[in-house]
Picture 1 (tube, rainbow, N blue to C red):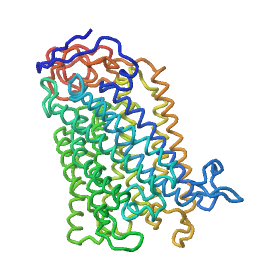
Picture 2 (picture 1 turned 90 degrees about the vertical axis):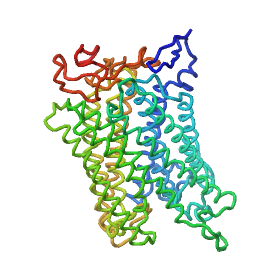
Picture 3 (picture 1 turned 180 degrees about the vertical axis):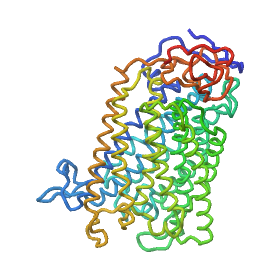
Picture 4 (picture 1 turned 60 degrees about the vertical axis):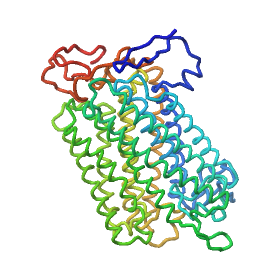
Length: 597
């Protein structure tokens, strides 16, 4: 039995009323909300895997001449056994460095930012029943699954996982005879191609949905900033991911069938036609837009949470939209600043320096507008709001440290030091992950119909904020002292004497930061089953997703809503019985939203 729901566009949407099998409802679902939940569980798993790899890596850095605590249970491909214990092999350390970055970027943060929240929020915030292409949406998740399986499998093949660094620079990555790693590297590259395919399929869907499936009255400048950010991110993904996928396929060919795209000479010393710099150009042409793929959605979530938590409209809404567009455009023309040490022509280096510095302008606009949104607001400091405020502070630190790298003379000194490690983590952990935690606490009630525990959420925030800064802020100083990234044993370098205690403090804090994730995991899973039942609109928010039940039913709306105004109508002068006005509420006919407080 099925009933047709008439859309104002004249298109009929069929809502299935009969029961579905477990496989069809929860595994091979075409419902955007179920697919979002699948992405969420998948990415949380790999977030913990990436954190575990980081802890193992940090133990080696903190105590490079001491045996591993758990070395006795690790296989011989990972450790060397000695009479006084088991010591980490340099090859395994290289694999940890490579796979930590790869897992975090490609299997955790990127699919969590886009796969989870673009799927869940775009139809709900635009007033659509589902994505434009539901089956394609399902496929975008299931093409991500082989990527995870292949990545984990690469640790257990002969030679171990890829160990050429997460940037996979050629010729090291193109010559298995140089590293002893062949199958693990190939598996990871195949996984990378699957990640690219998933991202491209998702991007096509998100872009089409935003352009074609907005509810009546939902004009471009009535869309929530979250949707704007996800829409622009999808465009970046559609343009950038094919470049990385093509480069990955070329690298696989170099390793397997004898091509020489990136290999200048073979094991016998014969000259070939390959160009290692070609890999750098292709990787960073993807890699720098990827930085904004990982930060623009976080900016959108933060804008939404800060407006709701401040009970004020977003300060300078249109300026925020144009800042998002400007950041995305500039992000595509600055990739060369990752290659200042490659022998680049100084004039070209100057062009990349100037264009990189220009990105600070729209980024500063957003930062000051967030501060303007909070200024003299009625701040509601729940867990989501705390993580959003934390994002602004950590992103500002990461942005300021990034100015140093935009300058060629300074970058030549700090390039590939721990200063760079500190910078990227302030942007991608202090930035992206803080915003992601905020988004989970904020939209968890809508996704699962229950509230997360606020006390545990606030403890999680303060532990994360303090321990994160103890881990990564000292890395600026360690980097300025000359400690290079991806270094296995720094004890033999005279200029690094005295950094041992700092590295140990960083590692102890890193273990605590990893452990704080278990507090979040407990709160998350406990709340799914035992949390307080959520009202439809627990935060008093004005965007469309809060006008449907928690969790939303299949098809979202029995009748497509009509949008009358923008997304952030707080402290509205025409409303007296509450301090917000829903997008689908007419200002002259206002009734209190059911189930809100």
